[in-house]
Image (cartoon, rainbow, N blue to C red):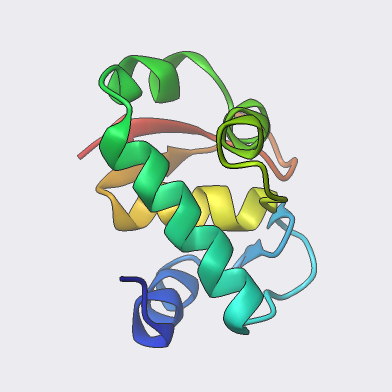
Length: 104
């Protein structure tokens, strides 16, 4: 279960992370956003090759993979927050909103 406290911790640790990724509008920490993060975490814990997937794709591509699997909208920020909560570290290669991930 993803709690509001989990989300606060992520956005305190990464203050430039927003709803649509890094450098975007501040996240809306409502039930919908929590549900999106929970869907990301569920996908990450049930996908056997997740470390390889996260290492080869950026957050925006991963967001779309999770949307297809879950049948629901996932924001880029929720994809990033969910990955962080599952032990992945975001790695930014540009000043854009997306990132790749490394396993902690």
